[in-house]
Image (cartoon, rainbow, N blue to C red):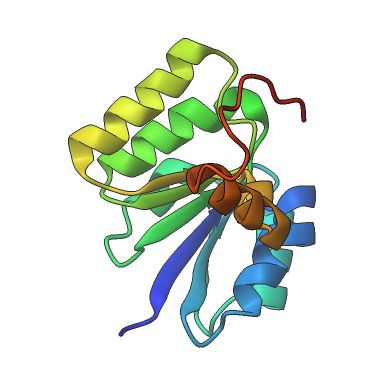
Length: 155
């Protein structure tokens, strides 16, 4: 399998603290080839620290989305921009990993889902607790009926 070519949109705290280090740990599967931030110095710093050789830097996410070689983008921007950027990325033929929360409104979240369905591209939101071993074990128990009918849960 060829490596995924990843673009990072938003090179601030969550990208530096979680997304880019996690992607670096998967260097055999993915290369970070493009970085975008409205503060271009942040994108330049991220490219130097995490980027593959020749990684590109952008100030405007729409320019990053024009790069046909990028397979997937991570949307790590403020919540208010998640919908706009995610929909544009999906329509540009990219798979999207969007940081949580998904969107500001249910209508915006629905736009994101509709764009993913329309384009056939994958969309995931960074709700990482669902992948934790204890969460997976609990889900398996629920699916097996080991806990009876679940009528209330609190998280």
